[in-house]
Image (cartoon, rainbow, N blue to C red):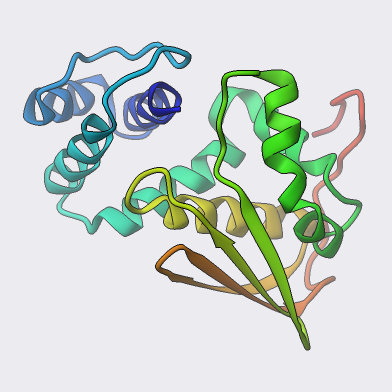
Length: 189
């Protein structure tokens, strides 16, 4: 899993801040400047990359990780992850209700991928808790960024709070804006 995370951080930083910044981050973190997504890497490398990137950008690591989550949906690989996640529900509520199934679905596509299990707890009144095991420190912030981007995609207005191994969603308006167009063929995405 760490190869996938490290590769995503590499691509995110190269895409948003340039290759020279990524090379400085890799140097400061003491890692190679290229990662293969499906190869295993020591977990401590991920923490060093996040810390080095936060220091280089003079931003809190939590903000950097939320931006990574948004980027994964909006810009990474021409929206492939967005399309995959849109299959989870016709509206934002349906999407959230099916999040517990994501690790098993992901393993169908990539058998070696071990996404952390997530438990959805509906508190009623539009409040939903997502509890998860964090594979690396700050993973909840990546999830918050993913959820923020998906809420925008569905046209939902959601307040998102991040805690330790938990993300709390307050669905304020399920139809606040117009949802982005989505179809199975990927036309008009």
